[in-house]
Amino acid sequence: MAFVASSAFSQTDSARSLLCDRLTASKVAASRQKAPSRIFMEKKDGSAATKKAGSTASASASESSESNDLRLGRTPGIMRIAIPSKGSMSDETKQLFQEIGADVILSNPRQYTAVLRDIPNLEVWLQRPSDIVRKLVEGDIDLGITGGDLVAEYGDQYNDVTHHKQQSNLIVVHEDLGFGKCRLGFGVPIAWTHIHNVDDLLAHYAKSETPLRVATKFTRQSFLFFESRKFTNYKFVVMDGALEASTQMGTADCIIDL
View 1 (cartoon, rainbow, N blue to C red):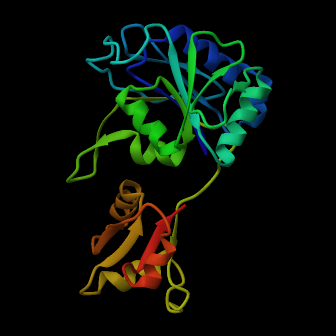
View 2 (tube, one colour; view 1 turned 90 degrees about the vertical axis):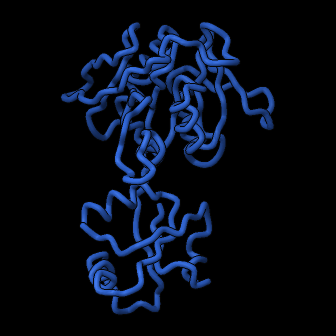
């Protein structure tokens, strides 16, 4: 699901408010919503303030000691927003902006920067969805449209040993834009006719002397899933793509992917 997220480092309240108001107040955004949304606006002191939209609004963002520092290489007063650079999420993001009267204007299709019609003091950067989250965390951009799965995977600071969440520099501005739906799922070799569901898989390897080798790029969400099932006999095989090939090559037993 596509999310709108903001960086706690952001110094561009007026431009961000204008854009977020268009996204959340327009009939187009309302018609796309499948569930009540959450809108988060930052106070000038850097703490998070919440405004209800629909029937619920709840979450928080940690205050950053650097929230009053301008990031290196930034022009004061200019907001940076990042949108997906290609694929269906890119097309639907551009369509959304067009429907709210803020068309993405890209003078050269080979460039990675653009502007939004009638939104002053704003830079649009076209980035990979996962990099959008990382740049938000670092404060290199102020607002981003990306997948909720990527916000969950890369949007928080985690302890490298325990994988538990430590803090977050992200504020979720809008949690459901109505496109980009996906789900994380298991995949096992077709030849494993004795495995019919996740319970079968975990029960089999709970008694095994060798760990379940899991090919995935979503290690944090996979860790939390295994932890919720109290399953510990596994190890990750980290891959960025072509996960299905890992079971055929014999380097992994199963995959966890979108």
